Length: 161
Length: 205
Image (tube, rainbow over all chains, first blue to last red; front, side):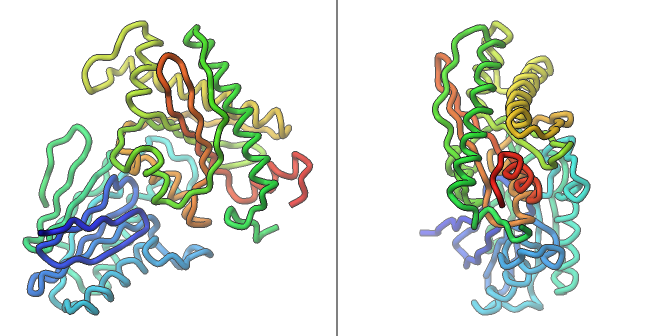
């Protein structure tokens, strides 16, 4: 029996095919799914903020795009995946409300997406597909077997990237 | 003063915040009753400091459909406030306000603006009581409405709290009209504003 592993907000985990991994209701947060196609080891991180170096209280590693992605890759390598084979897909980073007043919080979704892309590029992990921005929440499921990243949103047809 | 954090706040502060929540929600309830022209009761609000993962669970799961009204707070304190209502409750409220039941899954533009008005009045009366009690000038900015999964809406206040810690301060209130309406307030002052609120009430920080 295959299991569906759940990842919460500011959380990350890894899984091996035939298991899949999911996170529910991504808003301005970003979900980063990484996979090693050879070993079929996959992982998912649900990050809230772009940059751990900008925050004083930064001990929560999975909360930030930079430290979260680095930790995810590390855990996958420890499980037997190879970083040189890894590929990634990302989703989320919506702007949930039309007016978000605080200057630093404006475009937080977009900034999370940029930070995730930057970190992936730095680790030389190609970004195969993304479904980001807009103003709606997304539930995602990632299948390390095929690399399918399934995205569900309220009142919208399911899509696979 | 700088090392004040939500995690280390004493019980006394919680009592104060609970009382603020109580009075604020009381005023919001009267405003709601006036708007709907019927009797509305409320339960004693609960103030909770919850981890990011627990908040969505409390509201019935990450994918629970919610209506969220979010606005900024300016003046002597700064931050933001969010009022969340289950979508079925929102539907009931708007239906009552418009004098007809809401049909279908989607809200019309008219119904959305009615819901926005509900949120406006509730958050407005809440902030009013906070302002009156503390003698601080508190001005709300234009509210914005989103209807989506609980976790997606909550990501916005979670991110704001995320800058300072790993928890969310939540005031849960249940309103009863003919059916039970679950409403949640999330008050997100910046850390310095907590100090201002508490010291204006005569509590040394």
